[in-house]
Amino acid sequence: MATAKSPNYAWVVATGGFFAGIAAIAGPQIWGYVSPYIAEAFKIAPTDIAWGASLYQLTCGVFGFFVGMLGDRFGARKLVALGLIGMGICYILGGVTGGASPIGPCIFYGIAGLFAAFALVSLLPKLISDWFAPQLRARGMLLNVLGGTATGALMGIILPVVILKSGWAVAFGGVGVVLIIAGIIWFLMVRDNPYDEGTIPLGYTPEEAERMRAPELTAEEKEAKKKEDRANVIKALKYPVTWIFALSMILWFWMFVGANVYQVGAIMEAGFSIKVAGGIGTAIMIANLVGLALWPTLSDKILSRKLFFGGLLLGAAVMYLIAFFYLKGGGNNTFVLFAIFVILGIFTITAPIQQTLYGEVYPPNLRNAGPGVLITIATIGAATAPIIGGWWTGLFGGSLVYIFLFTALSAVGAALVAIFGLPKTGGKYGDPLLEKYLEEEGK
Image (cartoon, rainbow, N blue to C red):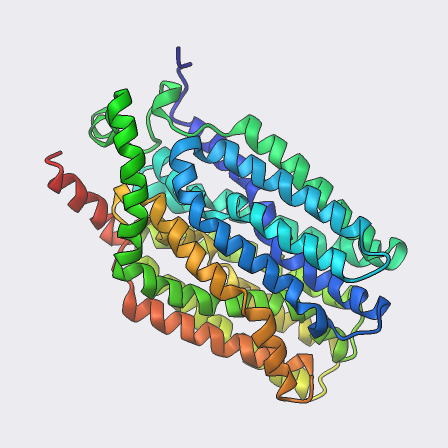
């Protein structure tokens, strides 16, 4: 028999999301820290092993295609735990195999992308929408983003010290251990559905919760639902918003992955130490906290989420341009450099808004399959980011500083596609696709 819980258990689920958030940053950012030292050990350029980061994004995208369907069967609790633990094991193996060749770390980092598909965001929108009413969802997602932010801040402080003292392989494996622990904690804290726990979503009245509750299914209905789940993938592929949002997200990934893979190397190329580069990474994450305090609550109350998403990206683009011109112009004042990236960090914390958008741009019957398909397409596109970023810097003599011009242009493109292509949802618009779905179902 289900154990009765308070609706406030939703915050326990959200806190579990904090530990899942570790993967969101430890996944893409670790390569930016270790790859310059792997390249140095084997006397090659960081762009020569950028395929490791591309393989990570590719496997994450390909296997992300199946995550939505599996989420309907097994739930986020089991799958995200599997993803976190699997990523951790791959990181440890990547560190162990890196003594003789750069191929081992690249391969195991690429395999980690398979597990990242389960650990990252595609299952979280439905989990949060199941546990929280619309006006609380961005705040429910906040702890997941905070987990990533805290991870990025600590990585910027700890990894440079560990790398300089013990080597990149120890740093790689150490992050793997953290991911394994995070997976265990996630599994212990999270539950998939409030109704199965004898409670209701936080923010709904009992009457509203009953209206939203999915009916109990017979064995025949469950089998029919499996077929429907497969059909939902086709529906999501045919849904125009999937492709519009995917284009915006591919450009967003070009910005995000491009910065994560090459930012440390670019700052070091400009004459600063890895401790400064790592400190800037930490400063960005601390600045993200300012954005986390502002944007989710505002996006729940005013405007629409797509305008917030696009506006933040345009602000990030301006700061990337300033960073590019400062470093390219020979700027060497550490305080000024930190100031530029702190302001940048306030704008780059788009995750709680876009992750909520992943669910809200779809009707409820597509909120597992839809985000899974969307993230699959976007992440496959993201696999090109390290290679295209490397090609872009090659156009300018191989100077990694030009990556900031690349990230600025990518941010502008992502913003414009989202602003002009996505439906209005969130804030004062509520959850219109949910309301339309309920009307069509006669609820």
